[in-house]
Length: 110
Image (tube, rainbow, N blue to C red; front, side):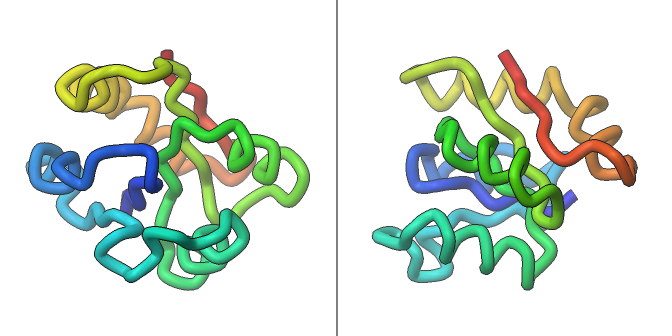
């Protein structure tokens, strides 16, 4: 699954998770550092990304509009990048299930 890390997550996650998510990117790499949620949503939809965020707004948008794009909502609060990495690694099977599902639009990881 192509992951797109939102502004509220470290861009270091792209390299740290390259072994299991080789097509991951960060909004900063697309010039979207100051972008509105709607712009990030459109970028993800057009380029086939799944948005990874700590922002409840994307989860709500997912409930309203469905997918694409799919959303991974990290419910961990302000936590070190290493903890976010561990959470995504631990959730890799659930993330694959989200990717494969025609009915799932949003995954919450704790």
